[in-house]
Image 1 (spheres, rainbow, N blue to C red):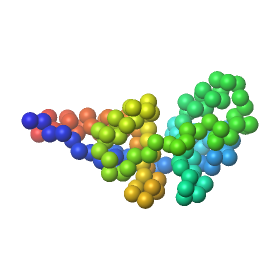
Image 2 (cartoon, rainbow, N blue to C red):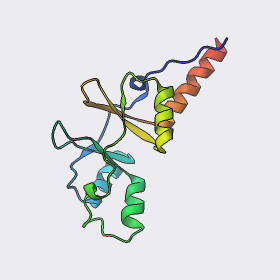
Image 3 (tube, helix red, strand yellow):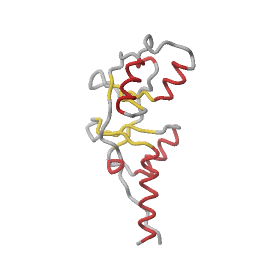
Image 4 (tube, one colour):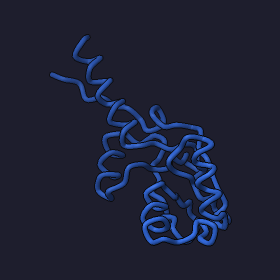
Length: 140
């Protein structure tokens, strides 16, 4: 009988997360993305009751560039997704993949038990980790 891999989101996530203020112009957000080689930025909470936001390259493409808006005149808060989908650090990646898939998303923000941002995980990262675990199980 084949074992089912139990891989937690925290084992797969990337801990280097780039954040940005919601009032930042899109052009500056694009510079930060290019500088760090990332395709998404987390929008910081204003206070403890606020939720995290997320802006991804496709938001910029469809909500700014495709509409011929100036990236200097559009602020990140106008195009971001908020609240961003968050995943508990201890969640099994099988459920995280299902959750992202249900919402048609490619990534989720990882939070600890106190709702503190601790990482970001992509569908790609989780699928590759699952497949790698499966390959090791077959070899054993």
